[in-house]
Image 1 (cartoon, rainbow, N blue to C red):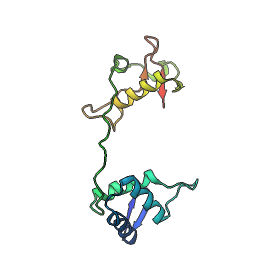
Image 2 (cartoon, rainbow, N blue to C red):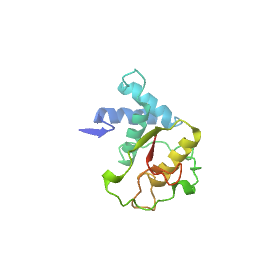
Image 3 (cartoon, rainbow, N blue to C red):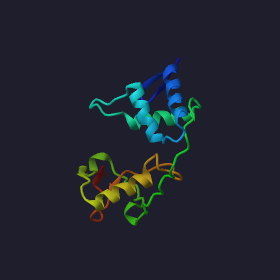
Image 4 (cartoon, helix red, strand yellow):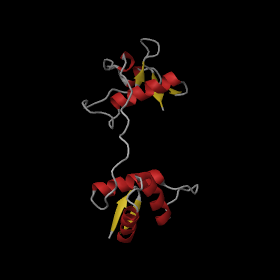
Length: 154
C-alpha cells in the first residue's frame, strides 16, 4: 500500500524507513529528519538539492495521519507583527460594469513599503490567514485617493 503526500507516493517500506530514522536518534530536529529522509529516499529537486520543504510538509501530514510520530517542535512559531492600517480597510463595493472600470495596472513589489502593504493585505484577506472573515474584497491599493485601479502583486 502507498500513501500520497506532496505529489509523491510513499510505500510502506519508506514509511518504515522514516520511522527508523526518527527512532534512531530522538534528539534529531524535524529539519534534520527531513534532510535525512530526503537522502534516504533519494528525494531531490531538479537542481539536485534536497526537497526539504516538501518533505517537511509530507512528514507533518504523515504525523497528522498517525503514520509516524515526529518529535515535538523545538521552537514556537513567531507571532505575526503585522498591524492593520487604514490603507487595507475594506472599501465600498464597486458597483460598475466591467467595461466602465479603468484598465488594471500591475505593479511589482520592489519597495519595502509596498512589501509591507502586500503582506498586510495577505494577512488581512488571504483565505489561509482569515480567522473571522468569510469573504475578502479584491486586493486593490489606494495610492492616490480615490484611485482603485492598481493591484499589488507579490
